[in-house]
Amino acid sequence: MKKILPAIFFLFAVLANDAFGQTDTSLLSLNDYAGYFGFQGGRIDITSNYIAAAPRSERRTYAGLGGDELFVDTPLEFALLSYYSPPVIQIRPAEADAMLPANNPKQADLKLGAAVFQEIQILRFLGNTAAVGRHEGMLKFIADRGNATRPEVETFYRSGIRGLISATVDEEFNKVSFLLVCSNKDHNAVLTRNAQTGHYTLSYGGAYTNNEIREIKDMPLDTLRAEMVLRRSDFDQTGINQVRAQAALIPAVARLADMNRIVNAIVTFYTSPSTGTFDELNKIYSGYRIQNLQERAARDSFMATLYSLNLELNSRIGRN
Image (tube, rainbow, N blue to C red; front, top):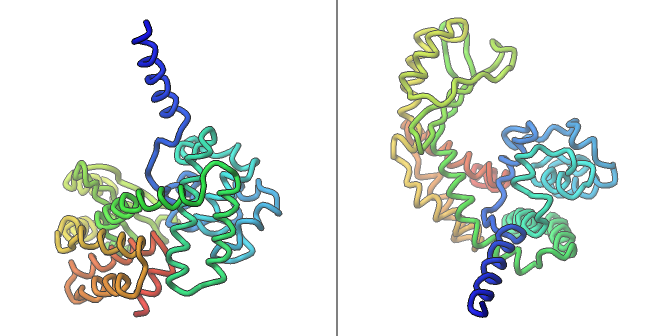
């Protein structure tokens, strides 16, 4: 019995750590998180009932980090408000709670702290000292809660940043945005490829759909095009043929983009921001020939990756 008890206690400790400790080491995808509240593409609806549920004093606490300083209008600001405002955390979708669990404050504070620290890296490189100060204040607020120290947050960030960037590159380089032109109507369209299954999803909308976003989801390309044939009110043969041509332009399909190089360059910049690591991002961007449709699509995916990670970084590369 004396030999069995230590093993039992060890097993209990492992299970307890898994149940109550910090077990999810992935960084928070702010856009994915916001998507569970109905926000898409990094755009936060400031009239949302989720935001309105928070007292004005709490909204002011988080509104000054980015965007318009008077409104909670960025994915980071919203993520912070949604977790740290008691009225909002009580009405979050279940999927959002799974990403930032209310019953695991250490894990949530590590993820939110890492998201704030991630912004600090770029803001400091860009020389925005005022914004750095505001984010440092927010990081102190998180650390002062007593669940995760500043060193723990930084370690968590450095161990997870490659995973976040790899997932973002994989997502952006497996889709293409285009104007889907039919003989009598046009749609703003996105064709997305599932890297695991090889299936495609077509999202489209615009004036001819009354700005409703419609989807044909998760099908082999030929099956998707057959479904388009059935939607004669939305497509004609010109548009159906265009989808096949656009599928060939998806950078991960065309294989004209060195995705490993892109991941490595962005990770290196996010862990060691400097003129040299920034120049490598510039070299990737300027290396694409916009006259070549496939390379132009890869360049767009590269910029969409940067946009998803940080709007100011995207803008700086574009200006250069």
